[in-house]
Image (cartoon, rainbow, N blue to C red; front, side, top):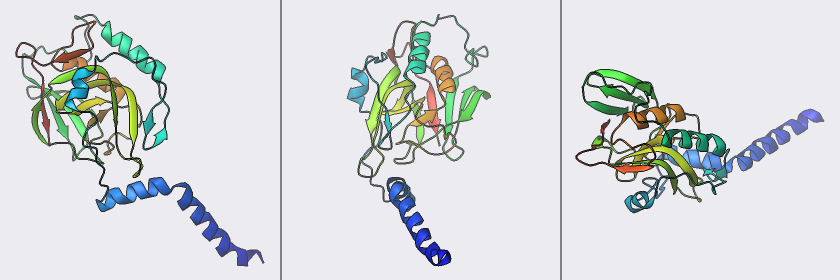
Length: 238
């Protein structure tokens, strides 16, 4: 009798799995088929970036990624923020001392899903990143035009299961319009595409390269726009 019920139980199990994971399966399927049609092309508009003061928003208590609330490490993000804003100007950060006088520049390899920070022809930092999955990361040569210590980012599609609302995104370096290199606390899948076009970084590396790259954000300040006197670091994405 039991063996006759096994096919039925198997069907029920498979259907239950599909129903429970429908959104994830659908989201991954439309991505693989190239028909996601997600309207989001970057995390923010230029006006949103410029209107942000880069401060940590203590009122924010919820973060959403792929339509689902996620573990939001508010306490550790706040600690990192207040440490960075009060950092002395002469504090040495690992990998950020340019004694060679060579140009600092950043390479983002989308094929490898890796970032390298260079001083001339010497790599001073290298680590895995997550580039665009739902929208492509723009390729080319750019210069960091704006930096914020903390930034709210939102976008995606609720219908496709890719909606996100991410407060207090740390150490954002905008290199092309609303596309940034920034820390990511909502996943740990670095080395695989995960974003809507931005370049996601592990939090510890994001903090280091933020201090290393130009334009320099003065201690006690949250945002900076590149100028001729305080230029942005070159970013090469390929």
